[in-house]
Length: 185
Image (cartoon, rainbow, N blue to C red; front, side, top):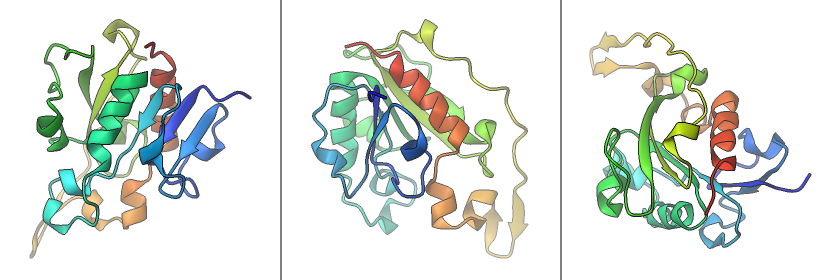
């Protein structure tokens, strides 16, 4: 099958994208920073530098703005944690705002709705897809329990391994690919 979407900055060995027909995967080893194809993209750039725990990050943040440029160039979707500092840095619209100069807009979703063990609030920057064509979102799942511990509040995400935290639930990956396929540039 001819590829119809490029999945960038993904875990090619353990993530769901490599097994999906029509998806060309670009991970760290494939140097997703250099993607210059014309397929619409699903971009998952490393979030450490841009996230809540930026001071613990092992990445330099360079991939975030590159991924924004890639999504703007060919269309598709970029996924990052809610409140990612990448939004301010790149001038991306916040959820509920009008689109930007590239026709991009932001949706807020919760990965729990696609089966993730944690709530995982997520922002999606979408370019090249009219809002009216965004695929139907799944029914909201109930929020996960948050427990009080001696060290503070711990949700499900904090109890998971790094691999469990960063892998995209297969139904969410399929939805993101479906969304990216609708992009026109």
